[in-house]
Image (tube, rainbow, N blue to C red; front, side, top):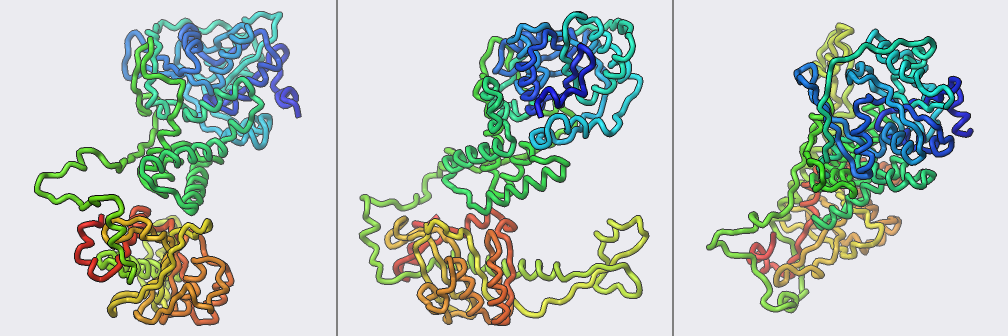
Length: 607
C-alpha cells in the first residue's frame, strides 16, 4: 500500500493531517518521505508562534542540537522556565527542516500562551509502525476515546483558527500530535473566532547543550539520532532506523570499548541473558523494544558496572555535538527537562594512579630481572595447586550445592488456602497478594530426599577450542575434592618461577577424594560431544549422592536426563546468569605450580 493510500482517511479538502508521536524517529522518517514525495506549499506544525525565530536559528545549527529556554516575565511556581530540546529525530523539527529545503511556507499553529493542555502522552511503542504500518498504528490509537476537557477544546479551537486563516488557494499539510488530532478535526468543522489575547511575554534564549548530557534530555537517545542523521539523505535505508538492529550495533561497540578498558570479554551466555532481560524490562513497561535506560540496567546487571557505563556512554555518543560554541553551553539533567525520571547509579571500577601509589617500606611484587628468567626455572616435573585458591573454590562448591537444593526445594513448595492446618507456616506473600479474597494462605514444603554430590561449573562451553589444557587433580585430604578441569595453558602466562596463571573454561568437583581417574582419557565418556558434556558424564558416574549440580549458560541435552535416570541420579541445573558476575570472574583464575616447594614463595608473585 502506498503512503498516500495509508493516510487518505486523514484528508480534509485542502488540508492533509499527519499525526505524529512527538520526538519519535519512526514518525520523523515517515513525515520526511511524505514531504519529499508531495512537496506541499504550506506546512503547519503544532508549535507556538513566539518560538518561530529561535527554531529557525536552531535549524541552522543542525545537526548540532540546541535547547530553547523561555522564561515568563514574572516566573513563579505556576509559570516556571521551560527547556525545549531541538532534536533531529523530532517530527516537528523534521517538518520545519524539510520545509526550508523545499521552500514551503511554515505555519506555527499553537497560540502564544505556551500553556498547552495536559493530555496523556502515553502511546503504543512506536516501533510498531515498522511492523504494522503507519495507518494501522493511527487507527489503533484512535479507536479508544481520548481525554478531552474545556482546555483541550479551547486549545484546538485556537489552532483551527490559525489553519482556517491559511492561504485558501494552497494545500496545507498539518503536522499535529496524535493526542490532539481528533480535537483539532472537530474544531475544524466550524468557523473559529480569534483566541483571547494573552498578556504573557517570554524571554527566549537559545543554548548549546553539553555533549555529555544529551542522553538525559533527548527523547530518542543520541546514538539513534546520529543514525537518523546519516539516513536523512537516503531515507530508504530502513535498516539504519530499525531499533533492534541499532541496539545490537550499540551493544557491540560498547563491548569493544569494554574490552579495551578492562581487558575482559563478554561470554555468549551474558549476551543472551542481556537480550532476555531487556525483553522482559520492555514488556513490563508495555513496550516492544527496550529503551536506553533498560539497556544500561541490563548491561550493569548481567556483566558489571564498567560495561553498564560503556553502554550508557555509547548511547550518549553524538559526534556532531561540541562543547564549545558561539552559544552558552549548559549541562542539563533529566529532572530539569522531564518529570517522573528514574535514576541509575553506575560506579566504574577502573585502576587509578593514586590507588597504585604505595607507602615506602612495602615490598613491591617481584619482577623478572631478565626476560625469560622465570621460564628457565620451570622444571615441568610435577604440578600442584595453590592452597588459598583451593579453599576459595571448595567454599564456592558448597555454596552451589546449597543454592541448588534451595532452588529445587522452592519448586516443591505447595501453597493453598488455610483450612484446618497451618502446615509449614503462613505464606505472607500469597496472603497479601490475595488479600481481597479475605483468605490466609499456608505453605507446605516437600522435603528434598537426598544430598548433592558432584558439582560441574561451566564458564565457557569452548566452542572455538580456546581451552586446550585438560587436567585431572586428586584431593590432598578428606575435605578437598577431586577436580577435573579444562583451561588455558598456564605456563603460557608465567607470573613467577615455576608458577603459571590460567583461566578456567569449566571444572568438575567431587567428594570423597582420591577416586577420580583421568576424565579426559577415559573411553567410557566418548559419547560426549564437548568438554562440558564429558565433565557432566563423569559427575554422574562418580557422584556418591543422588543429585548433581550443573551450572552453565544453558541446560544439558535432554538425553543426559535419561542417562542420569538410569544411574539413579538427578541433574540440578543452575543458570550461570543467576550467580554474581563479579564472583564468577574471580573464580575463573587458577594458578598452577610446578612443585610443592613453590607454595611457600607463591604469595610473593600472585595477585
